[in-house]
Image (cartoon, rainbow, N blue to C red):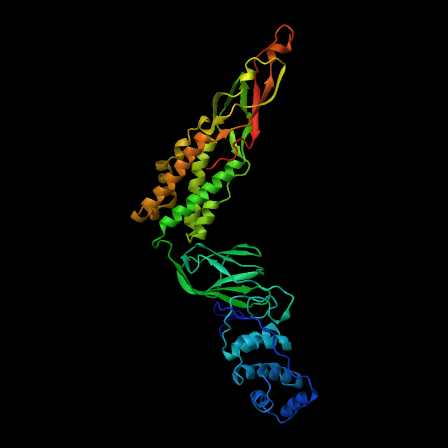
Amino acid sequence: MKRVGGALALAGLVWVAAAAPLVAQRGPDMEQIVRQLLAQKLSADAAARTLVSEYRQTPEQAVHAMVRGGFAKRPTAVAALRSLEMKPTDAVQTFKAVGYSAGEVQDVLAETGRLVELSCIDRDGYPAPCGNPGGSAATAMGAVAVTPASQSYTDSIVTLESSNIPQVQVLLAGQPLPILEMTSTRVRARLPSSPVTAALSLRRVSDGVEGVVVPLYTVSQWEAPLNWVLLATEALSGAVEDAQYWISGARIEVPTCIVNGPIAVAGPGVLRSSTGFQGRVRQRLEAAGAPATLAQAWDGAFRNAWHAWASQTTIPGLPWYPDFALYPGDQAPPTANVPTPVSALISAGTIEMQQEPLKVRLQQALGAVSKTQEAEGPLTLFAGGLGARFLAWSTKALVLNVLGSGPVPSRSGAPGAVPVGPVQSGMCSGQNVIPAFPF
């Protein structure tokens, strides 16, 4: 049994049914017999065997009787495991029921070299099966799902998901990994920068109880052959999700947009988003096993290409407000623009969202590892797929509800003599101006 930093290393992923321990006899005769055995200076091993062979006690009943009759906990538990050959999982339940502390259970299991085959960590502080053995009111942590499941790359991210996760450390080869995220349902940790194959485990912070989640988890050099097709597919999905999120918060800035007569004009910076990006490219790549540095660089390349387009977008004199050419009033009220395709908003950065510039930008961000035969096709797949989606979206999605307004100076001096006039030095702006359209 391995002890790491005072915690018991529990091996395996085997489900164990949680059965309530049998209750020992409580009659005075049995306790008197135990006290007589103790007075005879029998060892715990000998006393345990006597109770089972001569008095027909079950191992569980023998443990209960010996503890109540005066035998010390530690030798009683060792005798149960060695002399009575109790299964470790059954013994844990019995020890817990008779009042052993979590530390006492760990010490006995370690002394006897028992490996408890479990996949969960009992929140009561005992190495115990999934579920809630022993009738405790506490909720045990559920079975753990690991992504990537059994192997990943140096400096990448491993995600462990379950239910009711307490405060834990994630260990590989017994060494704690840096925690990037921890909730009651998910823990994300960064894998080491050097290759290693060892047990991946969780250690509960409150008491040091440790459970092995993957007995052999392999971390390889990230320069090793990567599944480029998978990475390109996941990155494209992440880019589409982030683009849609950005679009959902798209707005036309005021006072950047100027209205004169029916025409709206704005320079670079007029199109922004209140939602921004969520790092979906990085998240999907890390979940697929990509190194963190590669995932971050790929995400950055996508963001920079998108911002190259958005930050240089202009409104190039669009006839958005035809009623403003000759308006019959001193002040034109907020009026929605004439629906216009997104592609009508001219940007010098549009070229950055085309296949070849996207691919070049991506290769520059990823470095030499991306300029291989294995990476060539998948990177083209990503850049081409994103470019095609952007083109289709920008030509079909409409800019709507950009509200323009402004004064009509020619009427202000003589409203009766001049019945209509053009809006001059007006403004336009709007929130969520690009309604949902499949990107």
